[in-house]
Length: 305
Image (cartoon, rainbow, N blue to C red; front, side):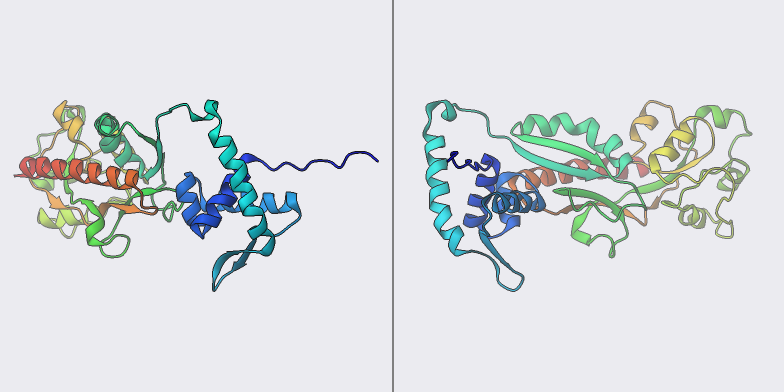
């Protein structure tokens, strides 16, 4: 008779099964293995398919538990893993790196996170950070991220303790645009210039504060669904942006944008930090970003004053 084929499972599948048996849930095992819960579940399911045996009982009311086959298989798996771990070549020291996936709105990432990111990397070299972008108004959060930066109302999209930055809004324009029009002597003169529009930030709050509360929202020109695009259009001389001082601080410092009026108003929507998967890396990033934003808030308050 031909020899019976050997059905060896993958090492990743064995590690996933061992972690789930020890942690008691796919979520806890995922945190340990730096994977998603669905990835861990798929590895265990693949192992069960290869063995043609259920190893876990999945009961919504009682969670996960080992089947009789799982109880018999687990010590054998752990013995095999222990043998592999005892091999000298497998014991070479390597730096422990903790993965962290951060999702952010595009402009916040480009203007606030990326320029300061070397400071976080230097302070936390063990964290392997992956920064991804979400799409304002089109995305309802990023459940796949460990940490998410949201832009929204408080309360509602964000809780008060999640707020990173309470921004100030003011009109900003390029020197070239202003040079092509009569001098602005008062806020009403601004209405002779093209006002850039975005659903993320209506003009109404600033116009009310400037005594122009009856002025309707601009209805001409492209509708820009991203605050970074609004800044880019302002830099190109296409119109005046109602911008956040924190997002435009580099352009203001370099003279590429100017602030025609000292009047600022508080933003009605804020940037906030939401931790989906708590971990030392997530807490380290949250602490660093809160401190960074606090410093920016102090800088913006001084500029507004």
